[in-house]
Length: 276
Image (cartoon, rainbow, N blue to C red):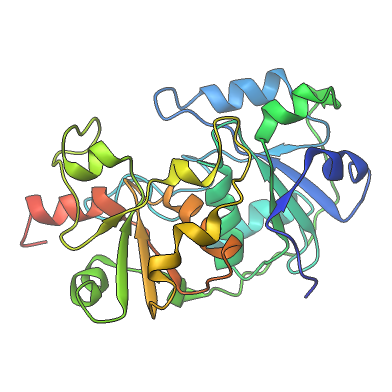
């Protein structure tokens, strides 16, 4: 397996636009307007980029438990990736959004969870590409299909029951990735209960990048207090923006990170219905 840097620059991507081993995926999305990302993609995207939608492609339908963005059906996502010409273990995928990796980070984590490590994020996102004056298009790309057969790293995900059982064990750190006021329960714009999972510490996902969406050079410092942990379980509201913190762990050279995929929205569902 070729080692792939988690972050690539707009300059690097421009130089590799015509590289047949590189596929680009637009992950723009807006939680308040689910149709927005697709609309933006159709109007203008990085030349050659495909589009994957958070709700339709990177999540499963919502059920009683599992949170607001349950993990997608892995075989279905694998089929979609194959149709985009992404060959398992070989194609270098570059994902981008315009939301500081809020949504592209989900694809970055999902591909690695599926066993495909050749995935990078575009530093600065679509805005940095536009600012550089690099090629955009409204044309929909095509590609010869490839074979993408996932090899799932199932131990990268923890369930509600596992979080409940392990969160207070020595060597386990539970990290809430939401902004500090939501962690404190001062406001809760989405979920039915305010607050956080008991015992969780708070490292907001927005701290991974600067205001322009470029990765900060302070990733190791963010995790200094927890680098000796045996397991770091990361969650957010619905398992999406927590992936930015998993990226931060990777950039810090730490491999203990796991995702509570259902996150706070799943935790709330069990508090409201303890019988399950």
